[in-house]
Length: 178
Ligand code: ADP
Image (tube, rainbow, N blue to C red; front, top):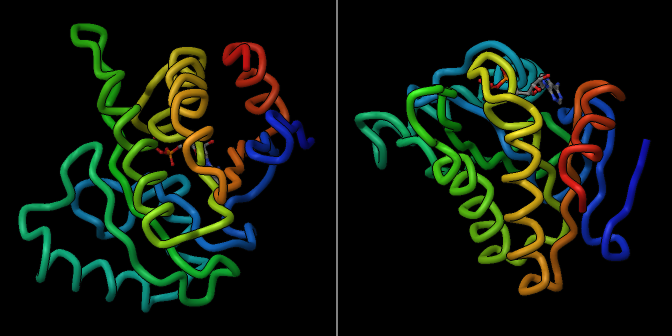
């Protein structure tokens, strides 16, 4: 499934993000940057062990206490078809607290880093909507708002939102009202 919004600036796709060919994919990592389950595990498996070594180096040099929620850090993509991985840490969903700005920060900071590096093709997974429990519909509204706000100012960048199933992609489109 491929749905385009604003020409080819934003694509909603179903598939495995580890197969994305472009300048970078975003990883829904955890603070430790040591790999994990879900999309993080899939990215580490596909990239090979050098990715874990690069993440360990980031911990040693830049983020000794781990990557804060909403922040981004970049490594090469190693064996991935994507040239780079932008690691970010989404918020764990909590009913007691509005963490939408933290989720928006993941997307904004990744877009900003990609633009700084003059990247042309960037893909995101649905950050925080798996193990971290963010309701997909709420996440969709946040992501759509960030894209609507930021993409017009980043004319060189095409973004793909990759959903693991057609149902997830469809759910996003229904909730996002792009
Ligand atoms: P988080 O811990 O941020 O919630 P998860 O990895 O648990 O991250 O899930 C984030 C989203 O990524 C989920 O919607 C999940 O279905 C999806 N996902 C898992 N594996 C892949 C993959 N290989 N490609 C694209 N999306 C994936």
